[in-house]
Amino acid sequence: MGIVKIADELHEDVRRASTVMCRSINAQAEFWMRAGMLAEANPTLSFNQIVQMQMEAADVRMPRSAAA
Image (cartoon, rainbow, N blue to C red; front, side, top):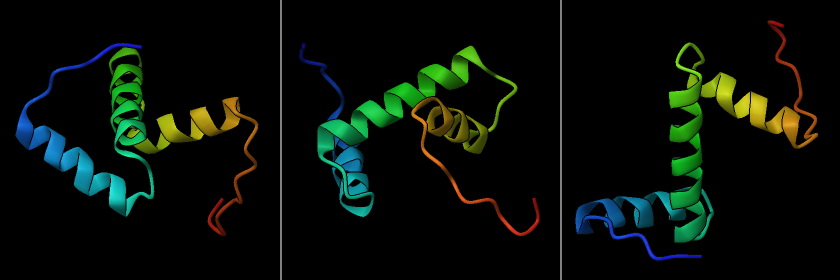
């Protein structure tokens, strides 16, 4: 584990987002870092596709929409 230096404004954004998403500040920052890393590695995928891919990799069963 290490320490990451980020701008105060970004830290405040992470703090605010973490309260909305019911995550710790560290968990929110880690979520954004992982999503960004996956987006760079898979530039043709949308954010929703990346999240779905991660849910499937974790064996989370997601309900299908009526349109599917």
